[in-house]
Image (cartoon, rainbow, N blue to C red; front, side, top):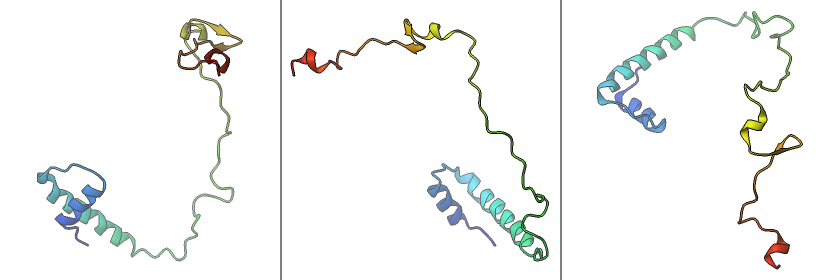
Amino acid sequence: MAVTRDEVLRIAALARFKLDDSRVDALARELSSILGHMAVLSTVDTASILPTEGIGAGGTPLRADVSAPGKLSVSLETFAPEMKDGFFMVPRLATHQDAAESGA
């Protein structure tokens, strides 16, 4: 299967790739070669091979899904001027007044 220059330009436009005009013909040849290899692979008879061949009866072993807090090289207190009960204290923004303060 041959990939044309127009197809390469269309694919590049869809993928939002900026292609140099000097590369378009080379890419068309490379893509045609890849599709040629896929065509050869599709001729291999795989009817007698199980879909999970090589995985084993138990499937792929998985690691335990655990996480640990990241280690910091400095203490949390160095990130903010004030902390309370393990939380960062930040000043209230002037645009966020309480309803009682605004007279509502």
